[in-house]
Length: 142
Image (cartoon, rainbow, N blue to C red; front, top):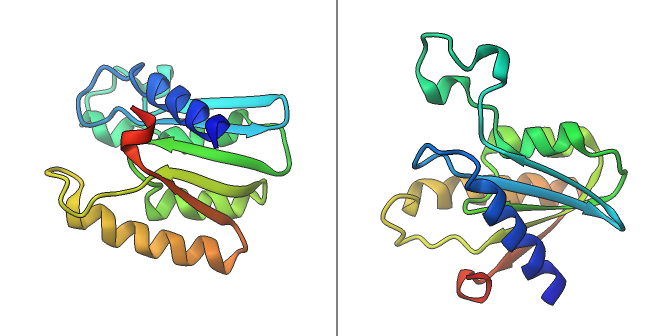
């Protein structure tokens, strides 16, 4: 259990690489001694294009999946669970055995109900593909 919390803290720390409030998401994928990371940000080649910033961002999970060379990793993401699109990328990669997230709170002022509904969908998709889900209490991670 302690190891899970350490990887979740690593995902939290990686999330801070994005300087845009509301876009700070970090991801760590671990398999034995192999670790891949990612955080929400735009690829350098398109960072200065004149479109809305959030439209240029690639999600943390996708960056980490692109960097991951293993075959049965555990994916840790902070502070929100994977969105439905990232969940589909996770199952499509066929390289993730479990997804570890902070337990979402339906009363969170920003995430609240919207993320809870998305996470319910994502959990169902992950379960249908035999990918485990672990929800860690945020207070144990802080």
